[in-house]
Amino acid sequence: MNSHLQKTEELLWNFITAPEGVQKAIEGHSDADLPIRPSTSLSPVERLDIYANMYFYRILDSLREDFPAVSKITGDAGFHSLITDYLIPHPSTSYTLRNAGKNLPEFLKTHPLGGKYPFLPDLACLEWLLIESFDAPDNPVLSATGLKAIPPDQWPRLIFKFVDSCHLMESGWPVGEIHRKVKERGKIGPVKPSPNKLRIWRREFKVYTRLVDDEEYALLKQIERGKPFGDLCQVYVRKTGFKKAVQTAAAKLSGWLKEELFQSTLKTDGG
Amino acid sequence: MKFPFLGFGVGLRTRHYSHVIKDRPEIDWFEVISENYMVSGGRPLFVLREVLKHYPVVMHGVSLSLGSADPLNFDYLKKLKNLAEWVQPAWISDHLCWTGIGGKNAHDLLPLPYTEECLAHLASKIKQVQDFLERPLVIENVSSYLEYTHSTMTEWDFLSALTREADCYLLADINNIYVSAKNHSFDPATYLEALPKNRVVQFHLAGHSDKGTHLLDTHDHPVKKEVWDLYAKALKLFGPVSTLIEWDEHIPPFEGLMDEVEKAKKKILGVYEQPFAKNRGTPLELHHRA
Image (cartoon, rainbow over all chains, first blue to last red; front, side, top):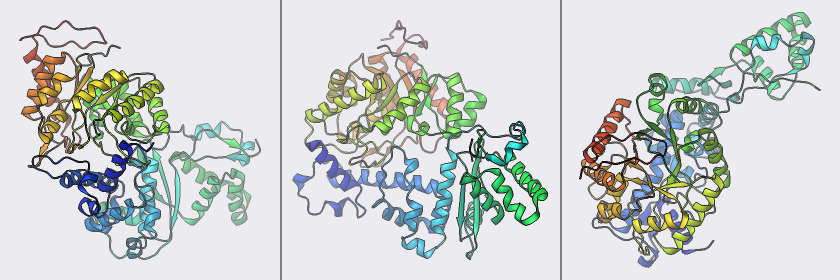
């Protein structure tokens, strides 16, 4: 469609989304190009400015809600500049504002603010995963009772599946702690690199973030890759011998079940 | 097509989720923003499920972008239809606007030029949507802050023509009519009087802000006196029409919304001798005071 309507909408879009503002965007256009009537109190440019401001501030406010820690750390002016820059390559293409920030973590990797605060891309990634977890599908969860109903001889071949709200994240920065501090105190002190492994998931309607140690993270990654329970036990068998390994893995499993980490539907390796 | 008179409703907002579920306030119905519930799971869907057990619900969308020169987004429409099949809303509404072009979304309700070309384009898209959703669509007028030099008809003539061309219905936002009337220097009563009587199925009422040079539809105040007066006029013209209080910023406790609902009920009593009875599509016998 290359209609008058399309031309009008493309022209308006370019004016109201121009990062340099309507007045500058309009330079080079003749009055005849500008299909806007003045009102008794506003010029066409001033009328367009109303829409330009609403466009930017609606998305800015939404992203500030979605990335509260990133916005606190960068400050009002910094976050404003960041989103101005972000919307140039990443205008919203979704029907919902909920998705407007999905490219922000990646974008921060090459943005000057990501250089000033090197942990910022990972912090944005954590905040994005919290959103993803918040409205992820509801899954029936696997309970200890449900697991006990499965004959023990099948356990080594069992493949657990995370609930859809569960995400694993690894960072070279203490992003979990940074996020918590910003939430509680509104600011952070100096940040030093420190490996962080996190598990993010939702129980009922609350999203949780938990710092996990290297061993647990390795096991969870195995589960994420679809490895059967028997393979998980092998990690411990090499360290502690068979009997202790089964006990240790079972204890870990029991904790995860209490935290409702797995879907009730189980698969078996090769079955 | 008969649309029921649902009575007086409010928009379902996050701030009131717990109160609505726990205390089940005496409100006739809720309007939900469709896109907020086009998600996979979590609390929003749980809350909506609970609300559906006790209240009629209307689905109100903000992203259909009917006026965009872009083709319809059928991925969006499939999600909308899935939600509607679950919710079974009294009706589905969206706006007389475009929200983006070239696949991009401004998340704003941008005004359209009122031309024959735009009318034909919009009518065609509304018909496609109605066919796809297998239900009529209700179209709301938006507040606007600019007018196009090439518009050849008024907004009210455009809307009237649209209902004929697309066989759709109207959600008359009384506050939006008032805001646009002030911003574009027309008489809001003329607008109301021109709307087809048998096509208006819902009213919106909301607060706006006076920015000095223009009025802005902010949904963050109680309804202004001038808008209440226009609402009274609309009641005389259109009779029992389901009415909704919108409040989206600086949202007060639920009681604050109920105060506005009570005012709307009083307005009706000022126009008609007896309070309206809620119904499911049965025509009401009116006892006009005038």
